[in-house]
Length: 235
Image 1 (cartoon, one colour):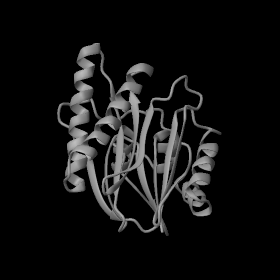
Image 2 (tube, rainbow, N blue to C red):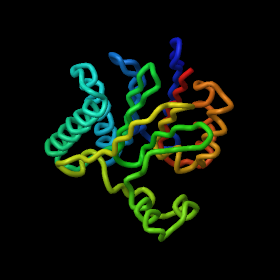
Image 3 (cartoon, rainbow, N blue to C red):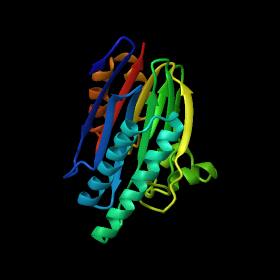
Image 4 (cartoon, rainbow, N blue to C red):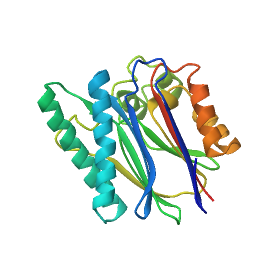
C-alpha cells in the first residue's frame, strides 16, 4: 500500500496456474504524476515476458526524461515501446507483443488513460466505466453478433487485434477523465473471469490493499491466466 494525503494505491500480481508470469506493471509517483500501468505479454513464455517488461521500462523512462502534457507523454512512451519490441523481435527472430494500459493521475484527480490490447482501466463510482478492448470478441460485440454473456465464454476471446509489437505504427486509445471514485487496472486474467459488478462491489467494500487481495482470490477460482490488478483511490 502506498499513501499520501490524497492518493492511496496498492497492486498485486499472480502467475496463477501458468508456469511464468508474463504480466508486468508500474505503480509509483514519477515527477508530478502518479503512474499506473499493466502490460500482458504475448509470444510464448520467454518472449511475452520480455515484451511486457520492455513496455513498462519504456513508459517509466519516458516519464522520467520528458516534461510534456500527459497525452503526449503516453503517446511517446507507446511509440518508443513499440519500436523497441519490434527491434527485439528482429534480433530473436520471432514475433512478440504486449498489451499496455497506462494511466497518469495528478493530485487534482485528473487522469489520462492510454490503452492498446485488452488490459483494462476501470473507473468505479455509481457505475462502472472501462476502456474498450482491442480484440476479436470486442468487434463481434460492436457488430451485435454476440452479447456480453457469449463474449465471456467465446472460444476466440484471446485474439487481440491491436498490441505493441504487431505493426510499425501504434494506435492507442486515449481518454481524459476526472477520477471520482476508484481507478482499477487489470489484465484479462481478472476481467475475463470476474464480472464488472463483482469488481465494483469489492473495491467499494475494501481499502486498496485488501481489494487487490480479494480480487485476485476471486479470479483464481476460475482464471487460467496470469492475474495483475492495481487499485487506486483518491480522497
